[in-house]
Image (cartoon, rainbow, N blue to C red; front, side):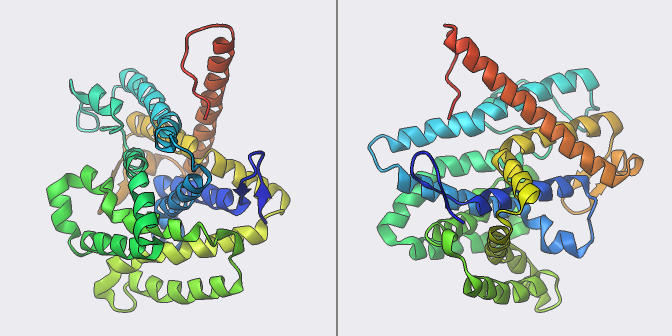
Amino acid sequence: MVERTSRGTAHIPAIDMVKGWAILGVTLIHSSVLDGTPWMSLLFQHAVPVFLVLFGLNSETWFRRHTRRGRIRQWYRRGLKRILVPAWAAAAVWWVTVFVLRPPEPMVRLTIGLPFWHAIGWLNQIGTSWFVTLILQFVLLFPLFHWLSRRIGAYALFFLCFLITMPTLMFPHWLRETLGIAGWFFFPPRFFIHVAFGMLLADRVGRLGWRSLLLAILILIPLYLVHQRVWTPGLWRFGGRFLELPLTVVLLWIMAQLDGVGPLERGLSWLGQHSYGLYLGQMLTHNAFLYRFGGACTLYDGCYGGLFDKFNLWLYTALLLLGSMAFVYLGNQALEWNETLRKRGWRLPDLSV
């Protein structure tokens, strides 16, 4: 189903629904409730890369709708309001949380330069914030992606991004040692292929039929077997990274079939429309619980100790989701107050998008 917005542009509810599924996946990742299960390895573990495919899709669609002069300036102004300003607000709440809960030195190291890094969008020391820094970089880079797509074609751009992404899969240990774990997480070339694939979907997302579904499943199955090290186990990193492309197609097709299914559609759509705010709210909630109850998460060992031992993990999943919703509510209230005061003559920035 394709709706028309007030601007006369196409809006596809399935995209919001997939984003809603993805933010639920991020919640399950952070709570560790499904660690070690096929549900996690096949579906929810890939939530963030699916977000990046949808970022490429939505960004390409935006550029096609905005063809007048000044759109680059409008794009960056939009990115500032949608991504960086909420990140600044989240960083401010984090500073208050740190001063109230006083986490131990190994968990948080306050430095003189930390406010500067937060101001430019690297939320250093704030756990799970790597996605914020990553998406900011893609906001900066996307006009170049779009320009290249116009010059060399979308398929050529996809192949170019494939060539750039491949070395990040072939030499991950060297890159981690060179960039550090934090730098590795928000290193954009790891996900160039996802953004380029999303751009390819921009022409097709409204008409994904049975053939698209079957083709995606036929590609997905061998990639999943590689990812699980069942088939050609030496290539498991490649399986995981490329699996996310056909997975997005399958999810878009499924959500298109669920479009119109009452509460499910409305619930997933609301989550998708507020997914970035929910991510920031969940980040703050997760950090607060870690500072209060302890616990740790590493790239290789997963999450353990502290809150992961003290809480039922399904209960903690619910707490993360409720906390993220509470922060979204507070953020929306702050925007309404800002607009009300502006109308009364206060000199406040216009934060509407």
